[in-house]
Image 1 (cartoon, rainbow, N blue to C red):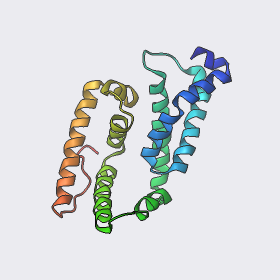
Image 2: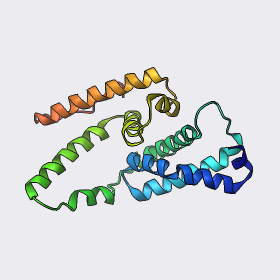
Image 3: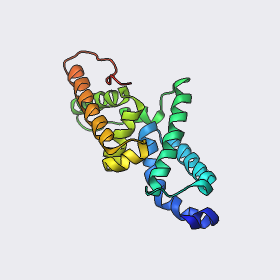
Length: 184
């Protein structure tokens, strides 16, 4: 780490080690490959820019990178909410079905329900689920990234799963539900 502060090639090694993880996290937050690539580049640019001020505090370097990525995507989402756009990746995911049309329709509807449930969650809860299920992180690692205790992460995770269940049960029975999550 200290070597990377002075040697650009050493930072390149850190980039190679973490770029796939950060990209994957940002892709799940944005749902678009091009946006994820752009935000990944911004994340590593900011990391390089702020590397001289990085101080080891007993957390893995990846936690610092995820925190930067979190801030980058939060700013991007805030800007994006002012001018919503439909991703071409999203459209393509729903138009290329093969096989039995009825089965494809049912699978698409189920994916759509899950996506709606996920998107209805506050960004913090979406981030929690991505870090837990996509990145496979422990509650302690998630807590370090989100700035919460391990117990707070467990509690948020439990409440999030309960809200998702209520949302999905509501849509399963034909009722439209509002956004889950009383603590939006």
